[in-house]
Length: 381
Image (cartoon, rainbow, N blue to C red; front, side, top):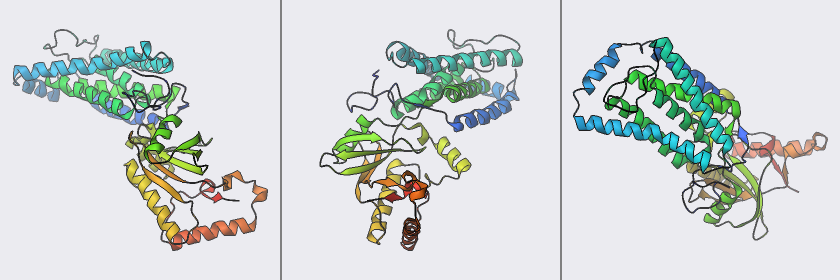
């Protein structure tokens, strides 16, 4: 498990999506996700009492399965619920500069455990049954305790993990949920309830303490730009960053001033749920071109080329594509500043006429910008 400037090298396995000192972001979508998941949990609780018909019917069906299949399900369950504990130990004792992440994972697991204890007392009027030894004996308390804590720990760590590691962990967790049912370890409602409680606990912890945006580091982006044939001498972030992307400026080795727009593979804002939430709440059309990063930057590159061909004043496209680490990048020439960087007193009628004229040229070319504001008008000279 490697630490440090995540993404600064293309060798070895990369676990973390951002440096340990990366700024934290509070995603409102996490809070909304917690609320919606809580509603699903309440609906599940209505049918999760002892002796529910669906659970009993499922257990009867599981009893008819071959013994080897049940044994395989129990083994998969153990692997899935113990993986987050291994991840927690790795973060706490190997990646020593990730103590804040270690804290988040611990708190999410602890909060999930407390909620599980309370729900078990309220619903089953007894203490949780811990499915660790004697797995053939089905646990019926709601929710499944180890599924609850495992999903909470995994969900709390997810924003800080690279996309492949994140997907690997969730594959194990979801497999454990299914395997606990197939293996007769617990009931359907208890296993699903454990997953939902874990997701709620982690979402609340993420919102309280913030999470990494998962944006690629400048070192990683330098290597990515080199993959696309652009060698950079300097590369720095803009002070203001968009919600779903990363923007940088820099100088190439041949002295050319360049603007870099990137969609990171590991960015937490690239989650489908976050994109849907942003589109619904902010009426943001920035992700209207599909969920694929390569498709989006290629669309924007094509729009630039088409606008330039039809006489619209736009920055010259330098390159566009995806890197070996699957970050999508678009590079253009850089102008001096945007309208946002000009004092209001310095904006005269001539400048405004030119801005409106550019908009007219863009529409005459049959192109809609989709997100036009003061930071998308560049001023040169």
